[in-house]
Structure formats: structure tokens, C-alpha cells
Length: 241
Image (cartoon, rainbow, N blue to C red):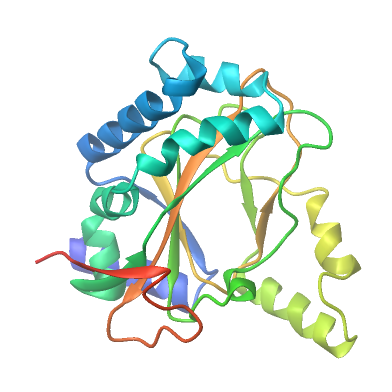
């Protein structure tokens, strides 16, 4: 398959298909540097061996308050958004072109194993005022070797659920909350990322493991598209040129 056809298929899948797609990271050197930087910064608080597995094991043993203290060390990770974008330049350019608006501060998420630790019910990015022209990139910093991960509801099913909720005058009603049960998270390896559009419902479920789950995510869109509710406090300009 040619690169042009592959990229066109990615755009079609995200815009008119199921709304999400797992892709291979194009620049592993940047992803490795990103993970190394994350480990070094958060380890200023954790003080364990400088590798992702030691970090995951330590985080799994901490309280939420202790994790919040550790996350403060990531405030210095000011180039995380750019690093994530640079891991998949061809894929992102195929979606948005050379000039982008990208999230000013990409998110690092830490999910803990065990009952009652599920962090998010099903939601879609438009709930937070994200532009309908945006996309999200989510990448784990390790293999997802157990059932921990994020599940995605295809675009057609997501739309039907939200239309039905609106008819009933509900927001996060039984249908949405019920999505937290019997879902199968996407199976992914380190070196893979998932791209999805802002209309796709997604969330996470409880999982059992000795290790925490760590991932980074960033939002981006073409600079030619309107930002709507978001502005330069949330987004910044980025160019591949």
C-alpha cells in the first residue's frame, strides 16, 4: 500500500469510518526520548530505578494524594505536546496539513489498578468545548499487557447513544454510564498510538495488575479550522515546516 493511499485511508477512517484508528509510531527515537524525560522528571519525587516498570510499580502503591504530588514534577515537561506531534508527523500532516493548533500542555494520565479506581466514565471531547475539527492522539508509555486501557465506541454507535440521550433530556444517563461495564479496551503495545475524533465516546474500566497504566494524549487540529470555545490559552501554533 502506498503512503498516499495509507494516509487517505486514515483520514477516511477517522472522519467517515469508525472514528478511531491504531497506528504505528513513525519516530520511535522521539517516543523513547519522551518516555525517558517523563521517567526522569517524575522520579524526582518517586526516587526509584530510572525505568518505566519501576515507575509503574511505585505509582500503583501510592495514594491519589501522593500521585498528585508526583505529577507536580511534570509541570516542567513543557515540550510534551511538540514531542507527541513529532512522533507521527506523516499521519498528523495527512489529517491537518503542515500548520496546526496543538494543545499547549499535553496530558499525562496515570490510572491505578484495583476496584473503584476507574477514572472516567464514557465521554467525548466535544463535552469539553473541543472543536469538532480536532483530533486526539493517545499513546501508552509501555505495553498494555493486561486488561487496562481505554475503550472506544465507534462513531455511529456513539452518535446514536447521544441522540437517544438528547431525546430523553439526559446528560450522562444510564446508557452512557452503562458503557463502563462489559467493554474491551484497545490492545496496544509501546510504539503504537490511537488517533480519534471528538465525536467518539471513550473511557476506561477497572483492571487488575501490580502496575499502574501511564499514557500521554494531545489534541490538535488544522490552523485553518476555527477553534470555537478553545483559544490560545489552551492551544498554540505548531508548524512542520
